[in-house]
Length: 508
Image 1: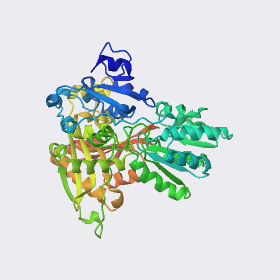
Image 2 (image 1 turned 60 degrees about the vertical axis):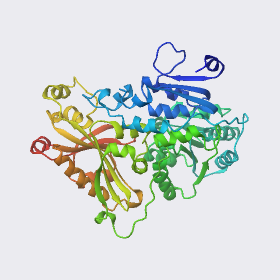
Image 3 (image 1 turned 45 degrees about the vertical axis):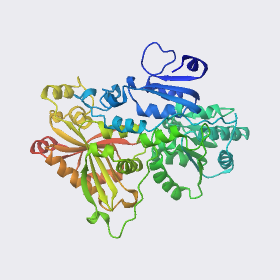
Image 4 (image 1 turned 90 degrees about the horizontal axis):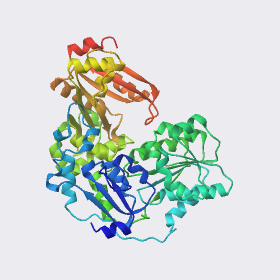
């Protein structure tokens, strides 16, 4: 890399290596959001944080270059990546991880160059759709939903609208999952709107004429509906395909709620890139490798209830899944629709984390339901006793540790648990018994694998609680506080499979 080039252009370094002025570790990459750069140097030796990798790629201007520093490509899949520590449970070490994700990534990386296509927009350029978006926000008296992929000027449109609304005497409030995500809004607003974190906003309910909600897909739908109840003139803005989570699930669930609560709501979609050209090769590469553009597979039921036996069960082999791109896209697209915070790191975890198994129901060649199981517990008596006493908290094993420490079930972490990490059903086929049908197979698999019980932890809603109770799961613990990510209290439920587990759980 020519030193002169680095000296004359703006460069972002993402690394933990010493001696590089201004370098940031991947965990602080979010502080660069809202900025522009010419060159990014991402050091994968320090840990390949795929969420950070996706995030900083969006700061690169047209004509810019992304340098990815890696071990030799043919050896990278076997590299003990420090980032593995984020999702591998005790007692696994990074060198024990099968690098399926990296093997797939390297294969795609070898297909070509991934610079940013040259595009030099005029300073202050506003697209026609941005003008439409701003005018819609200014004139609407009903909710507006503004959606876009990254780099389309969504935050800039919010900033411009905020300036004009305040110039007209309106009090404008702004909320988002974090202040860092709205730096671009402030950058394009002559007078910055008043910012409140979502929980602070709903606790204090400050006076405001218009509420702007940025990255709404990362805020739980129940909280968004509470905002709408108090601030009828809302703008819900979100990225559809992004590092922070997919907006596809948001679009399906929240817009359905809006149809009922505010039938006059308006939708605006920004499509033209503002900082790079259409069909940008780097954007295409990031979307493909991290499945940021994975969508729900189309499906047309062919009569009758699918849950009546029309769906076939199978367990997926992760080695084969990593080589089967259409199937992997189907699976991840289904997970995206079910959970508003599905991120690139979730893709890496489902391919690489030890002791995860993937179970699906298929009909007509389409995945109609999916579940991820994580094998946990089976810890030795000494460690379990330390967990029970509160002196040890090994990484991973969330349900066994909760039962041992919070529920005070001595010895619980010695039992083997199969935890349901995710379970999702195709939106067109919900309420037909598919979830219950898949759960029966999960129970059979867990028993066959010698697990003592099946466990699950989730953000509690009446509907989900009824689903798990109907399947015979009992409540082991309910959190005292609302979860910041979901807006609901967390609940842990279990179903005994062995005699030992039946005895341990009988007091629940």
